[in-house]
Length: 306
DNA sequence: GATCCACCATAAGAGACGAA
DNA sequence: TTCGTCTCTTATGGTGGATC
Image (tube, rainbow, N blue to C red):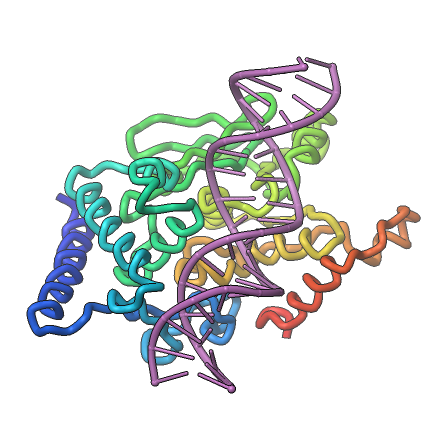
């Protein structure tokens, strides 16, 4: 069995033993985790990174608290599931975990949060625990993904190829692409393909996360950047959400700040559309809504802006 | 064919609630 | 009573199946 996998299993067993000890000593068990909802807990070098233990403020999930008890129970349940996944060397999607015990999990959002907590607790990314997210991103262009199993995924199919859920099992990439183009929306992605952008702009790879990119899409973008050493350009709307999506590709997100090393690509360059391009190109712009302005104010306080 | 709804990701803000 | 945490809601992007 993989050494890392067996170490994770031992780590889970240690967590469980700590809980048993607490109960035996008459204490109420508690999980103490770094708070991943607080921007003060991330530092910014070239990407967002969760501060190490001791420097970051923490949250406590106490069994004694009526409010956090369901979350405590969910984490215990998931630790058991993850232990089984590691032992059987299998994987499970977040959605499958949700449907396995809807009564306990209650909502997809709560499950996602509990998985994040377990990753923080074990200091390991979710995919190493066998927990994967259903992929939604697409990739198109002259690139072949060689998987651990020996399977080869050719991404030249019309309309692009769904990014595999087990993208962490890619062992090698083969491509002669000169750059990678990240596209915010699926509609734009399809339009660019229809207009023959792959031939007109030379060998290049198009990737879309269909809005906010999921984990598999961000992992693939980092793989392309690392293996091919080519420029990565972002084509997003000139609105707060477009800018935020570009920032997630480039700097990572607050929620996943503990995994930024695997997910962020600091070399992503903002191709446009820039707000200044709107007047230059004579495009009729939509006025910002109250929500847009609120989002802009929020973006302005982020570490990578300040 | 158009519309509705359930589903699947990502994110953050507001307000409710518990602990001290 | 205050402060911090947690849950719910809503925003973005989409797909696919059922119904009219």
